[in-house]
Length: 415
Image (cartoon, rainbow, N blue to C red; front, side, top):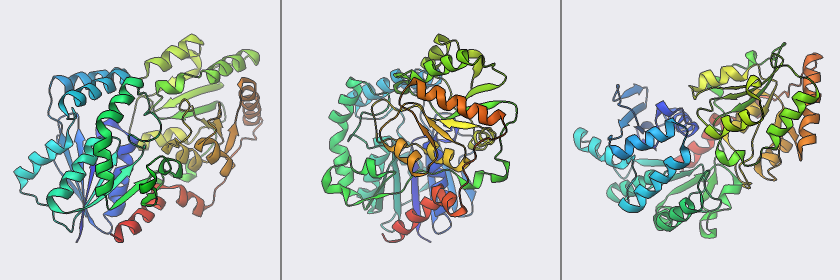
């Protein structure tokens, strides 16, 4: 049986969407291939290997050290910008990543005598150019087929989330040569949207296939999707980045909506699910005196996250600054859970396009628009006329990771 090696910078303990996506890919591909899912772990690994059918999970503990602990501490305390700056500076001065999966995999190869061959396939996913570099190195050493996967456009296109000008300059200055080298060596390049594909150099665009994000259909029980009869739950899923809080129109509108209509917190909640630590989010909530109305949960397994979505009344986004090309996994999860989606401030990009394409909710242009739609939705909810946007089985499958992974499998089979 042919083998595919899937490499992930993040591990299970981070509850990262990127890792969950790669895990889902690995599970799907293991129906046709022997799949080795190799991923980094910031914490010490208790179980060094896990086997399920043709899927072999190989978690690897990153070697701890001063910078490792500093970065980990900054992330856990919500200081993500400083953490990224530490990463960039470390790379600029050493040419290496603090969390170097290539180094850990090299140790693993020596200890286990595992050898790759030209018949093997390597799938490496951005973010983390170090993972792409690992894929390139393995192709050079063993002659494997190389698949580059992009959830973000790398050094091309928009400034990475929460990169400042210095970080963005360092990224483009030090990483561009390697990225172009990796693109040239790839046998297959995939990314998650047409918009991101258009950001790459023109000479590579025809080689790039689109395999979209999606929700995990195996983890959803559609029979549990309902409306909470007593509380209107406005739900946001996942991380909130500082860039998303540059425009606070949504929070101003919330405050005015609450005051204008004398809304009590037992009837109206804004829930940030799986968001984790965000110091700036807490500051914004405190500034607008929204604490009684807002709940923020830590990152958690996807099953727990989905259980929080069943009784939502409405979902919402916060746009990513001036970026138009970002369409996150949460959009597909919102669509799958079939409640209206609120985009409080128009991104004039992929989010607006998706909401309009699927007739999935409301795109607002200003504070008054937001207040109007919230009032209309809350009134409908308590008048027992909540909105449920029904989707066909075919549509739900097309929106799922598994539907997109079927396309990926066909592309891999052609290699």
